[in-house]
Image 1 (cartoon, rainbow over the protein chains, first blue to last red):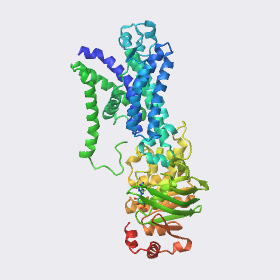
Image 2: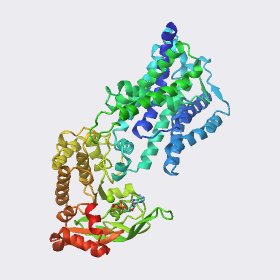
Image 3: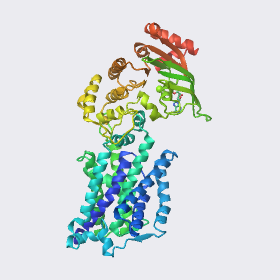
Length: 316
Length: 264
Ligand SMILES: Nc1ncnc2c1ncn2[C@@H]1O[C@H](COP(=O)(O)OP(=O)(O)O)[C@@H](O)[C@H]1O
Ligand SMILES: [Mg+2]
């Protein structure tokens, strides 16, 4: 029990970081109605770009910006494969993801893992987040406000604010309309190819940003860090929706719900680990959880349907 | 206002499913003309409207809207000139968005979408005012999700969206066919009022011959991918269903036409 409790701040911190990735997944999966598998690759791209740039002495914010742009570029590739080349969205994402493995390796100088020199106090002090701050902020070796929960929480709040603003603009509304009804969007003069590409670009930018934060948190970036990211993202989206979907209706709160979903996901992981599960089975467990939670609403609609009003839409 | 010149369209060319849906189709609509379109199932009525809207490119021929050749323009660009209502009530609105958001999207048809607010307070007031013409009480439900509306309400909303910014051409594809008779009459009524108010050039497909005669100032009948009957003015006003059937048999050279038309 004490083991679990002492692991809690770390779990929340990690959940918050992955929550940013999950918000990216929310944009494609929920708003645009596209299952985008690019994220498994672009998450690592973000970390890779960050670790190489920051490691070679670049400014932290510059390295973060570069990571964001690299993720956006990955989203752009998937978007163009889908819209210009006519490849189904799922396959387009898989192709980019596969290609990114080589790209990520190349970025990381063909090493499977690149570490930040956090044993160097000066370097560590420059980082935005680190596993070391989780304890350090509490025992006084670092100021309390450097606790990852505070830093990433603030980061997330700013991102949600920006996204809330964006999806309230004409362009953002066009993107939402594309996901809601493509036919209507085109009839209202919206270039749906362009809005889809834009959505994928924004989403993968967030995913890469999240990857860059996790790389700092772990003090290293590994080539396989993003494997299964899409499933974690979906899990966060679904957990948040099931638990808070009825309470939070405002768009900003819905994004917050995703972040909370990711935190819960990581707390549950800690519980399961504390219960003595072999960490090897975590991926299986994640896949199972997502499969079950995706099944429930479908079966509910199919076998236990209440008479629904005509024109109703479960997607609302 | 609309000029369709010798348009051909064949679906699934070169396969066993090959179907020539439009064959040397020609049509000229004057500004302000309200033309109803009838014809049997598969005559090419929807295909004609889709060709005008640019859902896919045509094989041959030209489409000119308001003097501009739009034959090569993609669907989303032609939308600037067009208002469309579809047969399926689900097709014309975004179900996960609010009534006012749907209207705001329609108000920006043909303009580039910027980073300005997607809807302003002044617009909200305007939309509430505009919704009154539908007489469905939607003006009190501006922030309701459209997915919660009935088929008839959605169709009426789509009609308002199509005409919010005066289109050069209004395309209605059996837009009341999926509604119950009472709702259908209401939506058709709203259509008449809106078309009249703004003097909109309109193409309205209907499977109901009485509606085709009662509405609009011109009537065309399609058969085999082109127009076989075209009446307007006094002649159209005096038209009866029986005469229409006779005209059809004459044009198509077949007697089974009667059932085909009546039943479809
Ligand atoms: N997208 C399409 N693909 C293949 N065939 C089509 C398509 N749209 C229409 N058709 C065919 O073209 C013919 C005319 O269809 P349509 O214009 O929908 O007829 P209607 O006059 O009943 O509206 C029909 O035979 C139909 O099956
Ligand atoms: Mg039709």
